[in-house]
Length: 114
Image: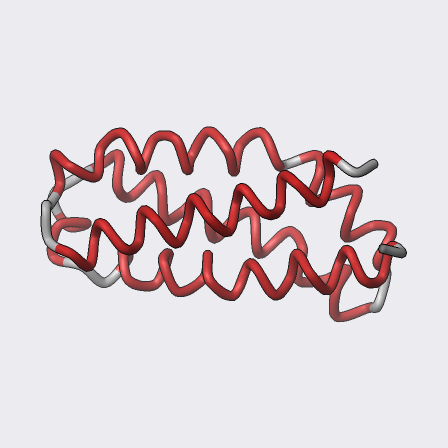
């Protein structure tokens, strides 16, 4: 994949991350759990940092920023996977965990090809 294709692939995967973030942010559980708040805020911060470069078509800057912040995205995903069973066993929270992990794993794979 060239840099534009990589950036657009990551951006597509982030649409799933966005939906997880939105679900978590608007859940009743988020009102009571600081760690869950940290999860959805960090997901938002990751995507916010990439919005400008994508809108500008600056794919090199997009990939540089995405890679720079990747560790934080992975750590946040791991945190959610860890705390999710304590927060709720509802299928929506389980599916959010699965969707987030799948998306982030695929983003990591894109960078492993570098």
